[in-house]
Image (cartoon, rainbow, N blue to C red; front, top):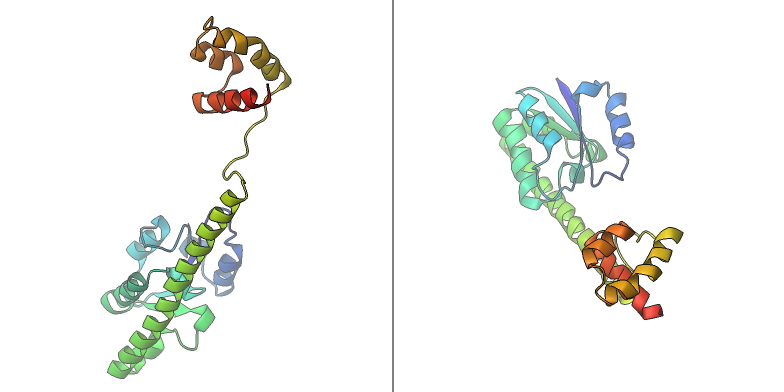
Length: 205
């Protein structure tokens, strides 16, 4: 049986390019396993499901080694478990001339040695790339904060009605004629957003 494993790092990324490659190889959609998750570990639902299906003699295609994962030790462990313990094979389309476990198997013990060396090198590269991505993300967040940019979802602006209510109820709240809970309910906002609004309002009054 031939299977395809596809992975993108997040739900926002498009997996279609990889899926199309698998279809072009004649792999049925039901045997194309797609995860939208980081490659930092192998606790991915579709990957684990694929491993339940795979049997000796099966062939798994992946687009690139880093689609399998980005953890050095994990990549080597999973590769060996599939190709040596289970007895299936893996083909990495990006480096098909180097990474086709069937070729290494045909070379006997020398093939195992060569496979281990190539796998160690490319797994190391994949892990280093993951570390670079995390570093770039951290640097980007730090720069954004330094420039005073707010990260996350943009704050929802108050409606005209809410703004009018804020002006009307603020002095009553300050005079303790209404509670903060009542004030929040009238404005129809959560506690955290309520105090953000009050802070902003007091700055411009």
